[in-house]
Image 1 (cartoon, helix red, strand yellow):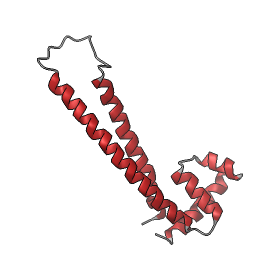
Image 2 (cartoon, helix red, strand yellow; image 1 turned 45 degrees about the vertical axis):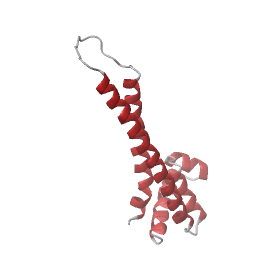
Image 3 (cartoon, one colour; image 1 turned 135 degrees about the vertical axis):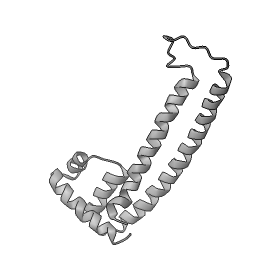
Length: 134
């Protein structure tokens, strides 16, 4: 697998968890009676079924979030071990900061004391290095 694709799995996992958390927040708001539109008069014979469906969906999403967080933690451990195999501590640091911590290029640049352009070059070198261990 290409180094960048391998490392981006963490980013994608994080974004998926965030999407689930956003959906959970929306359902939680609905379950608590928030965001009700009273401007239109609607007649509904039974609200119990839909409320039960919302609660059921909340439970499902919470379970999925927990599963995805567990998977992400395992992935962090796996990626961290692969990054540790790189012999250069600077390259290792760049990959950890970018993919495990999710730091911006500017933050990495500031922390390491190099220009963003230099960090890009080192990042490319780090990706080439990690591909040897995949």
